[in-house]
Image (cartoon, rainbow, N blue to C red; front, top):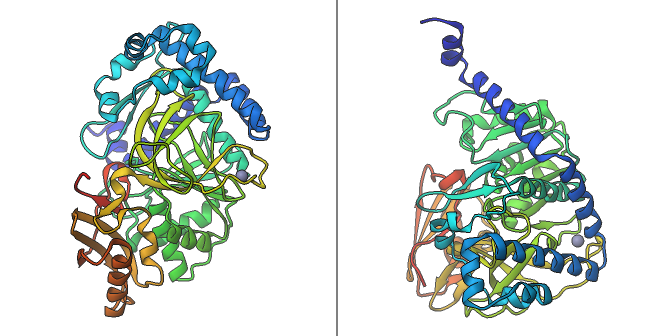
Length: 466
Ligand SMILES: [Zn+2]
């Protein structure tokens, strides 16, 4: 009773958490930024500027390496190779043809048979077990080895370098990590990681009464990069713009991750911070990357894996179509992903013009988001990107669309005093324009919209299968 450790625990849980966080960060730092990481980064930076044939030759070489490892060491894929009579020389002769013959790996199978999917190569020791949150149920396990971690961080670093951020630049991260007790009422709502010069800010405390503390802290900290959930950055940006808050720093860049970045969020965030926000796609299960360049194109990182784009008929999507992603990854060697149906969707680009940034890798038009975030009505079919329905509207702080049935849409929204009946009508009209006339729309004004799993905000939810 009453020893120093107890007192610290009782009175300064954040202080203790800070120490633990920094110890973990130190360990992670050592694991991530190795000599191999430096080599991968150099290779990736070169590939970003190389001609298309060189990129595709690299992709083909990596695919052979990945398929061969799965052939030798991954029981789940070994069965598939055997059933289809695929030999090692088939892999070496035409890896793309081999890949196209393999079965698509579903999320459920990935989750249930994870131990069958582990690469048993004795040279690949498990160095970390990650867990990715699903929208429902238990998280998916993800075994990692050194190479997987190093490659992932090399790809991250390339994205950052492309938007003029260097390792060691002061940065702020908003994520779903519960870093601060959710019940905490007064600042700090953040913890500092000295090792990576990274301020973790809680995405769970962005309530009206707390926002000024966040801004004060940012003004003191002066980050070069802000990164994290667009929904969290948007709340802060909206507060800054609405109250004409003066920031005494201009970040070099903002990076949106893990959630869909909507155009209305982009506009508000860029206005508040006076710099560009760049979109990025990668999943915690180890998918390949899609990253936005400073020319605004969402380049498929074709050296990090292979993306297949399937339309709703399960055929290869045509230019301009909405497509679901099936991914094969070169950044996850311990739990390899071959033709993994990751349940995310994009809009395929109508054309592939040369990008002014110099990168020859192809790009997608838009990252749409989770497959179950796409609404569907009999009149209009699939409708992605509902953010355009809010164009010209004022007074909506936060809004969530829940399609309960084919003919019923519930809108839950938090509004301020500038929201009026005219806005209400305009929103109904906009929604009907996009989703059709035969849809019942219920608009609820609410005080709070709870965050989904892992602290992510779900702007659109469809509750039935098509
Ligand atoms: Zn580009």
